Amino acid sequence: IFGSGDFPQSLKDFFGDQMPVLTAEEQASLAGSADFWGANTYGGKITRPKEEVLNKALSEYTHGDDMAERYSFSPCGMCGDQPCSRDHVFDEDFACGAASSWLWAFPDAMYQYLNKIKSFTDKPIYVTEFGCDVDEEGGMSFEQAYDDEFRVQYYKYYMMQIAKAKDEGADIKGVFAWSLMDNFEWGDGLNFRFGITYVDFNDDALPRKPKKSAEWWTN
Image (cartoon, rainbow, N blue to C red; front, side):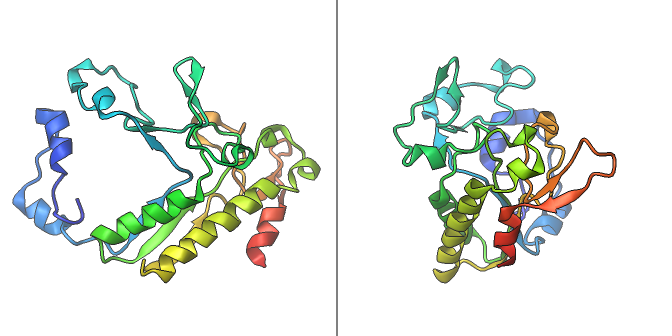
């Protein structure tokens, strides 16, 4: 929309007359108006067979269907009532080591994503979100959560791919780890921790202490 000024044709085709129609003036003000491209990504995804998703009309959906993922899935999660195939997963302990099953730790996905962005925009790129949670960390004390080596490895491998994309011409101006502190994670509440800083939610003062991953970032 910030390129042409209008919604993609695929979106118009799917939503039909439920899509808002932008005036010529609105389109002119939107086209080329973005100052930068903000890229949020956490892990890789596998695309679903097109017949599973492209042949399903809007009228067949009920509220909430495919809200999180319509066209893709994480091999670390469940496909219906069965575990998804992990044929595409290498080093399963790392790749599916996050607490959230939707997060497939796949550093090459970051590289591919940044190259895709580079192919259709000349705007500067900021990686505005990337990070991971650690298995069972939600219920840990600081002493238990401090040594978050999985998170350190995640950031190390992802930063290598970001550097590779930058070296090959992607105009990357900055990155932002998700997250600076443990926080309220949408529908998951306080059960999952993405922070490089530990927050004690059992203390009204919410004291904060840096984890090993925070120390890695300062090095």
